[in-house]
Image: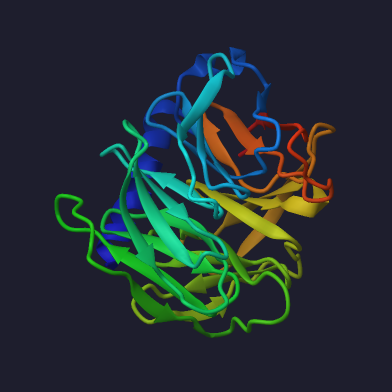
Length: 308
């Protein structure tokens, strides 16, 4: 398990060394820096790739929307089940792993056809299945209502499992009222997992074998309303949704400590939730949690320059 996570992180580091920070065509800077999503869509998650294709999930219907970053144009490629699609991650096999929010499930979607390849029931009671991380041998999924991680072990050729494993989160993290474990990413050395707890603003390192957590030493900084995470080398981007801010952290190699080096804001932010990168740009969907949703409510995606 640990070597596979390490392989994922090392590949990301190698890509940065070969092509510069946050790999992708340099001409991404000429792409639209704001583009619209369908009215009433209520976006939450974002994933980019393969290529300049961005995917967004609707927390209202669960539909998946694909946009071309070169033009900002797109369409629904998978009609949702009427329950949320939150965190998203795609793999090189053309599959999209989707966290199902309060439906307590996860789905794997074929990006070519939009069909659901497989669906997993992760919880039967109260749950909020929130974000997804893909490593070489597993999909890891957080639950903001229950102190667990869900693991979908992947076969040597990427085969999907019959069911998910449930790993209790123990140690330093303590669940409380509100949104708990949310965004998830690997540590820079690839040996462990990072999880942000939205309601406390704390960042934790979790052992993928045992679920034991330790708090990451941030020198007294807090990441209140921490949501989506994005790791690039030893730089961790943390979206602080209702604060309309992206915190930029420089982490130790093992992820046990870090410091906030910058906080990015933009007048176009309207409660962004998650973040993905293409070229030297960060893309964030505006979830607009503070705006009452209607079928005519507008939503968009903004991009900003990445910082290292």
